[in-house]
Image (cartoon, rainbow, N blue to C red; front, side):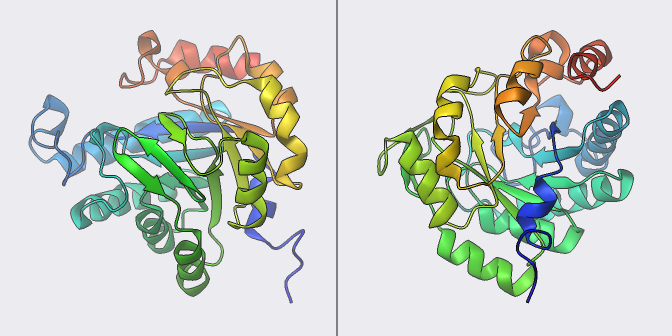
Length: 277
């Protein structure tokens, strides 16, 4: 029987400290696909080149892992995205996994954990991010509910190595089933089977409440806790004292705009502030 401390999906996530975001432009199946200049002729080729360039830059800079996300697909489908979106994600993630030597994660917005798992299973990605693994939330996509039972059963069947990092009180959402943060963390950790817990601010790029994170750490029952939004070069040291890892995207972009390309100076400043240089 595998040693739960060393062989479980959670064990691989314990090594991570800095996790960079690779935000994709609109993918096939989304409302914005074919509309913006970034999804012009031969869009998949362009997406792959974009993703490889940004992933390579982040990995070389010193990030421990990456998450590839369909951020450009807003407005998002609530739970199941079109099959062509999953196919495009798989193509992009496959190239990213081959291009870098750090673990790669997958997030299929808004909450298609099964789609993310499928991408990870066929590409060799190490983990997935699931916005709602447990409970029910009111979001701009409507009511989203967790499907931990189905997701974990599917993981056991097709990709047992893939870890699940789950948001609790996820950004851009209001908790319905469990408004108490500590209880929501505990339920996600012990009843939903998460391998890591993610806590974020109220929206993309918004700071995470570090005091609240410290208060609920015991509720995670030893799982890694990641900060999912709002970390900057000015706050990364304090954030890493409170949490096990940070996910950063917006702070690394030109002008601090989430949809902008990476800014070399911002990336370098962040890595320096994190003590990696």
